[in-house]
Image (spheres, rainbow, N blue to C red):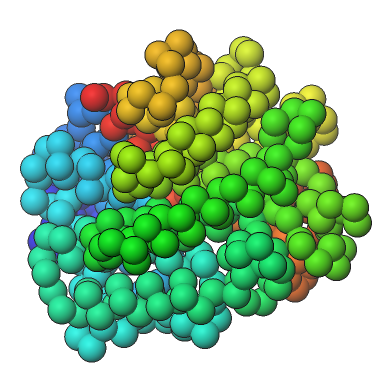
Length: 418
């Protein structure tokens, strides 16, 4: 644990020793319990740092090994870790603090074996969620050039070649979810696909891959956008066979906040890698504009936040949700900073960011930062069956410090700190 400074190390040992480590996954809570500070060390997380670094240090404090992120009990190849580590890459680039790089590097060291195989990853499941952590390996391979990372990356890229598709070429979300495209999958697969292509493909192969990336967004726009509101449904079943699927057009019944959050992040992150002269850029930017206009219309006018079910703010059980709010803020402010949206859109991002800090962030006496009111998980189908109803979404577990919120909060903070 040489990547953790002495203050954080002392606190982490205290937590692990007291059995409090997993208790911070509490449900329907406001904040994790503060631990006893070492009187000689002062604040565990200094309050004079920027929010991006404060949240990253708090995550390292909660999860002393990077594989532990998002409450993992054992090393597992899973996507939430990669979002926090994406933020860590940018905090490291900004601060140059070695412990942040080592925190990222330890994820690759732990999860990827010397032969390039990845712990707990199963290619034949064709689960698009599992491509997202490939972004960490792309970063580490660029920095370290370790052969094991290249082997692992090639294996992940081979999943794209075999991923089952709809009749128009859209990736199924998972092999066990036939004929279904979910908004989540655009973030899970397309930034990795585009980044890998930029790093390793050339000529006709690169053009074909970039076209394939853009096609995924085209199909989402074709099938999942509600023409009345501009919001996007969580998922679409081409076969219309799922109980949650509309029998006329195959869409799921509701506008789930985080699903749209994933989609926004997918667009702004893919644009980092799509060539400047690719015709798909203009399309993605136009999609981003209509998307942002739609989410601003459902932004709470008082607190600047967004709801678990986006268009049903006043209904019983609905609540302002941290992961979606963080994702929307990141998407909008990054779009403004990169020139995809006019500067006038910054006001909505700033209102949302201030709303998160005022209403969803709490700081323990020792300086540790918590992000509260995060939806732990939501999906469709499976066992027990998730029907996509309003009641389903508002009754899923709520917890603090979910990586699907802390990661986007770090990324959004970095954009505001530029």
